[in-house]
Amino acid sequence: MSNYQYVAGSDLDTVTGTDQDDVFDFVSAPYRVVLQAQGGNDVIFGGGGNDELSGGAGRDTLLGGLGNDVVDGGADDDLITDGGASPIHTGNDTVYGGAGNDTVWYGNDLDASTIYGNRGNDLLTGGLGNDVIYGDDGKDSSLTDGNDSIRGGKGNDTIYGGGGNDTIRGSLGEGSDWVYGGDGDDVIGYDSDASTVVLFGDAGNDQITGGLASDLLYGGDGNDTIVGGYGNDTLTGNAGNDVLTGGAGADRFVFAAGEGRDLIRDFSYAQGDRIALNGQAYSVSTSAAGYALLDLGGGNAIELQGVTATQVNDRFFV
View 1: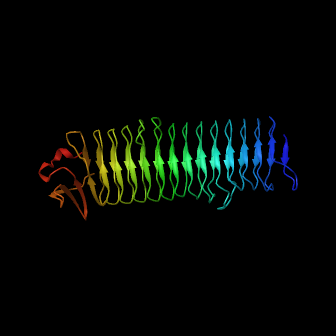
View 2: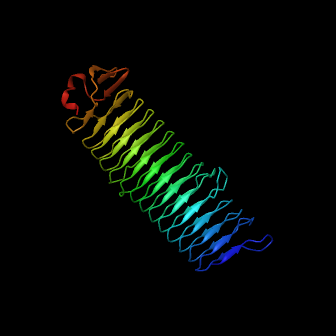
View 3: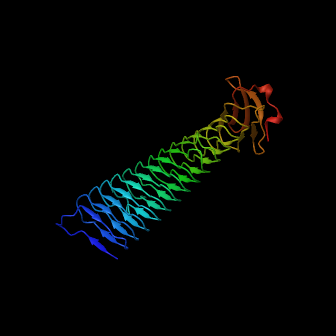
């Protein structure tokens, strides 16, 4: 094992490691350090400048420290973290997990960071700032707070938007993902994904769009807008006054008791669409717009745009 530690007053800028298990301590370095660690299971502590830290091969642990750092885990299964035990400003870092099943944790970072999982099954945790997270290839998990932008990438990803108004985009043609928007008014979209995804908006007025497959879409609390896409989708608005569009395919619209006044924009019995009321009784009338209105009682109702009251029959329901 080799140890490298910054000594005050020394002239240190670029460091190259060895293939051993090295420890690099630049915590007290006030300026930029460039490190290429090479092989071995290394432990790296960045300093106060805008550092460039690369773990190389091996199972490395990297802590960027202060400054706007670029941190690259390299090959193998790495741990990359801001190192903070409480909310801190560590800088606007750019993080690359590299190949391997990496864990990136910036949970207490108050600044905005950009995190790339790269290849492997990664666990990516943003901080309290407005982060940008890319899962890339592999079965990734992402957890964040702040107004984040999150990209799932390939693989079967699990994404938690957390607090804030998040924008979450899915993988491009691959992966059966599970997305939980969290608090805030989130935009969740999978318009190019060919695999089944489960999207849950949670709290806030969310915009949710399914992909090419048969997706499960849940609005959660709030007045949500849900679009099914191309497959045989299941749309559940949950609480709030929601707007639901099934899109192409034979879609199912699901309603429980006490979930508000919802609008279905494209219900088509001939296309195979159906409504699930979960045992609720209903009466049919005509809305102010001239469409069929299913009154569920207690101020809860479903309006069927493009359908008249006389067209409603028991075959609409499952």
